[in-house]
Length: 108
Length: 116
Image (cartoon, rainbow over all chains, first blue to last red):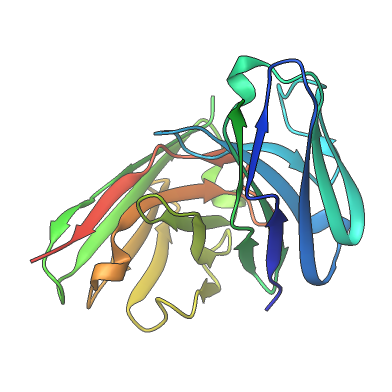
């Protein structure tokens, strides 16, 4: 089973700053099968990025994904107040999903 | 628009059973694989189960295997999760999510609390 490790656990930033979130896999992951989600308190997860770098519908272009193999990143440029949330990476394999433990982006 | 609405959650005693439902609308349900994902209070996301678009195959997390059954009724556009022998660690918000590789649409969740 592939384990996804996200870092850092918490990122304290100010609006307008940029955020770089990391997701490291214990084994190589096909880029096609790597996704990122945003979750706000009391809400369901929302798909941001799929296929490692493709933005989902209606996702602003300040969100970008990259990486390959075992190292993937989610970058949020120019943080807006509504971007402060928890972010999860997820991989698909053997008809199951695995999630990272999440990175909380909080207001500094 | 795509909509997924979960129901069936509630408070149940340890060892009890519940059946969760996920009503789908706004898309051709019978052409999509579907997942159940849960989230314990204050914790991260945990995948629970997946069923192929036609119901031909089911897959389960080790933590629920043998106690949970995922199923679907494509004529009713509804996904199910039958949960038996419930334990305290099954307490969580349960979400249904559409699509096999990644969840492009999610329901709002239904809360399951296992407590005596």
